[in-house]
Length: 503
Image (cartoon, rainbow, N blue to C red; front, side, top):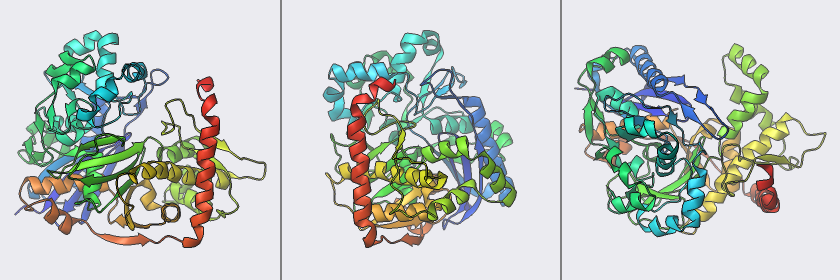
């Protein structure tokens, strides 16, 4: 009897693979970095062939390290970042680099559709905000700027759909991902010609592949993919899901009483319900569990800001950490833990990659003086990211009550000092799912449902998801962080008139 489930996860820069037992034990994990390309200001791309190579190498390392017989792997499923665009031709070859979900080239289309009222008119069907890196805007941009690319293209895919295509040779879209792209009617769960026509891209319907659900079987591992990955030819591959759904499943989100926070390049704050919020949240999409919608408030204002700071200013610390056999982020955590939150009054706006305060808002540090150190700046970054999450959470409170316990995944889940800031700011208990790679675990859960290892998602989650870490809030910190959060919002409000002048 098959004993294992394999999940892959393609985020903004890293391709991961992990192998799990049917009770959720993480057997082996591997990751590969893929360089982001910035051919022009505001353009963010990735070489699709290199991304596939990185993913295949990560899978092969997992299979090798685990020592398991590939025949004992029951199923594979993929997850990855949503939006952006991955175009392939009829033979499955990329027709251009992938455009990433942090890309800004199509901003003028969003501004025009907003000015013309298209976004409001179509909102009852799409149930989400429009923004420059969604496929609707990118398809319009490619049509007007790279018509030859469009002529050669046969399919629009999301990141995980492209990886699944490479594994199986079959092109499908998947509902959770596509329902977050402003290309379909979220209420019916189907493509909608009226939606495409509203954005002036009606002719693009030819590029939209057949829709599958998360736990649908979408093909089998081909002989070529087997050779590259070490997987067994013929192993079933499930539909997979948008990474926000993967984190929801890995956090045990099965009903609307729960709430999940994802601290990654994007800061996502989400819950599910059988009743969609049509207007008022950043995005409503279809959840992996049939009958549920996922309501999300999020923006690119999260842990990616810390990664940028470390890459720019912590080269020596990165080398030291490598020599010591630990992470540079351990050093960051120690520096932040050594500061006093009552004394550290520097405010950081985490808008390096995007903003939830308007498209023109920029990142900055406010309140610096000569006595401040890198430790103070790091604390400001940690706190600023939490305040950006709080901004989104404030909006979610319009539609639901704040739970006593929040489940948190992503980079901050490895930092006790950062988790304490989240708990103290939210004044909620923070629970951390066991394991290191929640995206791959969510994918593996779906893989198990797809091939009948579990009768449904609830059974899969009951057996594969566990929690052993809880961070309790300190009531004495409530007023302090409320004051800091007020100052953070006041700075954003005060700087609003100057954003456009900064270019």
